[in-house]
Structures are given as C-alpha cells and as structure tokens.
Length: 266
Image (cartoon, one colour):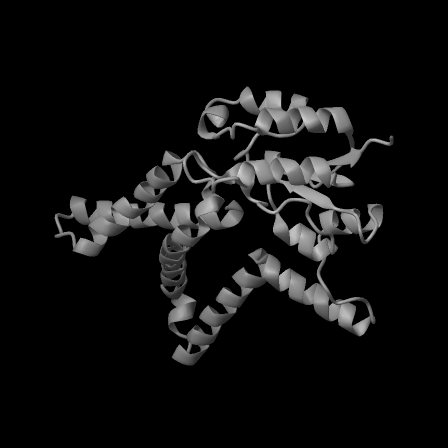
C-alpha cells in the first residue's frame, strides 16, 4: 500500500478526532460518523482473515482509501483556507490553489505521472516507448525465442511481455485451494513440467508468500515466519515438483527479489 495506506490511515485519524470532538461537545453523531469510524478497522480485520497482504485486496481497499484520502485533503484544505491572508483572496484563486494542490500531490506521489514523464522523454529522444520490467528483459536476454519459461508464483504477464511460452496448461495450479483444483489439472501440470522442461523458471513466490518457494533455503525462511506456512495450501504433488527442480535446475541469479532457475546442462 506504501504511501496510499498512510494517507488513508491519517485520514482515519482525523476523522476519528472530529467524531471525538462531537462526543466531547455532546453533539449528536450522524450515521456517516459511525460508518467512517468503523470502516477502516473493519477493512483491516477482513483483510487479515486470509493472511494475505493488503495489496491483494486493492479493489475493496480502493474505495476506503479514496474516502479517507478525501477526508484528509478536506481537512488540510480547511486549515489553509482559514489562514487570514487566504481569506482575503478571490474565490476563484482559492479554487485554483486547491486544484494545484491536488495536482501537486499527484506529481509528487504517483508513479504513473513519473512513467508518463519517462514516456514523453523517450518519445523526444527516439527511444523505444514500450514499457518492459527488468524481469521480462532478463528472460528475453537469457533465453531463445522457442525456449519455455515457467513462472512459479504464476505471472502470465511475464510470459506475455517476454514473448516466452509456458510449458504447463494450468498456469495457476499452485494457487488452487483445497477442493477447487479441476480433475487432472495437477497431473497435467506435472507432465507438462517434466516432459517439456523449461529452460528457465522464475520463482517470485517470496514477493507474495502465497505458495512455497522452489528454493529450499528460501522455503525454510518462509516457514520460519509465524503464520506463513499455515495460510498456504500444499497441493499433493508439490513435493514431486520440489524434487524435480532440485535435481534438474540451479539458481543462476536473482532479479527484483525473484530467483532465476536455469536448467542444468546434460
């Protein structure tokens, strides 16, 4: 959540302070006051029930962040408008200043604005405009066009951006929960992995901690953290996959916190 979560948290604190003032002054609380007071901790509680990180629930969090962010902005704006020299300014100027403040927040904090700037910079310097992450660049630079690449924490965007096919049909196999895996999916995954050995395996599981890493040391480190192993569901064939990778692959490097496994030379 980075800075977005802190903005929402600060907005919630200000909202709580305003509600507390109403209570102290014995003013009646409106339904919206009760709702805003309960919403933020309720979202945290619901997000914690599954053990996944908050960004996994960004869709449900987006509305709460927007509302509490607006509350924070309104509070800051109100404080600024109450300054004596601001009161004497024309209303249109105040509106313009508020809009500039919003744009300022976007420029300072938004990664999207930074990317737009980089895109325009590339445009005028005749560079390639397509965005490509470091992992995709690594895959393209270290594999041939016809090589297969498996992503462990399934990230189909990497296969797409790198232009490399996956050896397995059920790409999301390790994420299926108990009782949800289609019949034959695990068998198909194991057959695809072992019979169409990928040249490279990109293991980004540590970035999410939703599935165990293929690297034994990283897996042990994962399981040493309280609650991480408990929230994972281990498919019956995972041990077979761990053994297959250990016998046929080695860790070549690490990029963006992901292990790059390379097929051993025969």
